Amino acid sequence: MSVPCVFCEIVRGAEPASVVWEDDLTMALLDHRQVHPGHTLVIPRQHLCDVRELEHKTGAALMDAVARRFFSARRATRSERKLNEER
Image (cartoon, rainbow, N blue to C red):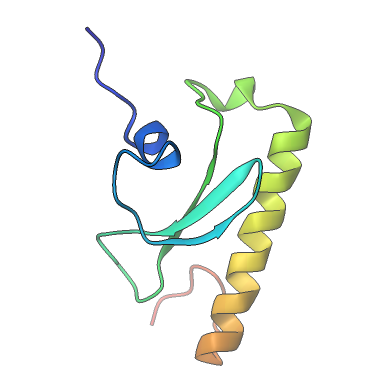
């Protein structure tokens, strides 16, 4: 028996998550480990074993969701730091 995918469980509502964005193709949630305040994971709703399985439409929606989350977090924190810039 295979281990259930934690992200699939979150998408179907079987696992708790702090969802901050969702649409038909993607979902953004706060990482429960919070390496940095506001650390957000953006995931496709579709289960993938390999990123090469990602359909173009879903990939575009995923990148759009990443950009939205990045800019909204930057506005909320008024940060001018780059995405992965060290403190």
